[in-house]
Amino acid sequence: MIRVIKAGASTRLVDIIGTPRRAHLGVSIGGAADRDSLAYANSLVKNPLTAAGLEMTLLGASLGFLVPAHFALSGAPFAATLNEVPIPHHQTIDAAAGAVLRLQSSPHGIRAYCAIAGGLALNLHRPLRAGDTLESAHLPQAHTIARPPEIGHGHLRVTAGHAFPHPLLRHEYKVAPASNRQAIFLEGPPLPSPPGNMITEGLPLGAIQLPPSGQPMILFVDQQTTGGYPVIATVIHRDLPKVGQLRPQQAVTFTYVTFEEAQRLNRA
Amino acid sequence: MGNVPECLPASDASLLARFGNELSIAVNRQVIALFRYLHHASPPWLINLHPAYCTLLIDFHPLLTTHAEVEAFVRQQPDTHFAPIGKRIDIPVRYNGPDLPFVAETHRLTPAQVVDLHSSAEYLVAFLGFAPGFAYLFGLPTQLATPRLDRPRPQVPAGSVGIAGQQTGIYPAASPGGWRLIGETDFPLHPDWAMPGDRVRFIPQ
Image (tube, rainbow over all chains, first blue to last red; front, side, top):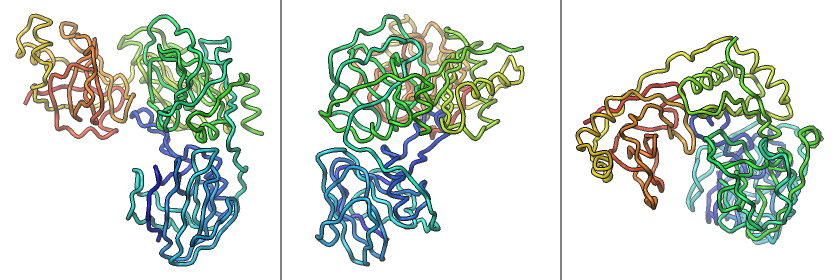
């Protein structure tokens, strides 16, 4: 139904559910790095918000439509063309059979999403390659509402780690280039490494670990499920999609909130 | 009344149940018992369970429940002092690892004695973590405890059996690693090859 002409830097089939209830097997939650953007793209094409779509990182893919389709783009505002004509994000676009969609890149955000009406079959669990064919999931229309994503700022709200009631993350950090879906590595003034050995324990999504280097790291969707470095804070649920849009060299700052505030923000 | 864990918020969407601060089978059994209870009860808000040596991390959907409700659910666990014993898994091993001579020399044993010791013990799967299908095992004979390599190997083949400190384990996938490699297995280590509480034996080939 869709032929991958060029795969871009890293393009994957993802949904906003991932692989829950497998952490006890060492399997991380996975799924879309910016769940807000994929959900929003799905809402535009009247898909269930849980439909699978395409996640493109840093540099977009080129896709050929083998059958007519409706699609929408969201996430990082990668420059996009359909048959060489520029097209906007956040609109439903009709593609004729034979049309070619090309995505480039954008100066802010790092991941763009493409939802196709009917959803895509989530049958390839690896980065896509040129020549792959993507099949429709033939999902029925759904009238869903999703919040438009926030792209481009690195201001994250966190709750304090249970052993670190005093806020440690008071400086501005920069996103290190080695960052990926497993972890966002931060560079900044080194923090004192807490003494003692920790016994390996489970790590929540968004945990900010402090390794002996003193440079914190944010564990993300493809994280290790357990680990032994102290967790000094965790990103609130509401702000996890923003973590999925952090670019190398981008500035990141943290605001501490209480669990009650986090709960209110998550439900707002 | 069984031992009630200390419950701490680990994030706005997770609760950490802690049964103590020691590496012991008795503490780990309580973790496994709570893991099994929640795994089978399968409440709708449950996202993930991360058992470890003495803690169970419970990830929940933050729009569907709260820390207090999850803690109340944990406290409803029926009184079970001991987790039921899991299944037994035999792992065939070719004891031909590059570090087998080092492990033997370190402990003034022959390689054959290392193999005998390693394969005569029964191991308990404390939990799986770090990577899909990576099992943390209790039960390495203390005579075999060997420090990690000073410099990790850039690539350890999938199926390698190794020792690191008091731990022994199997690499389910090729990865960098600092464990002392004593053997290898062809046993298929899909992520669900073992569950916390299962028992493992290594069978020399």
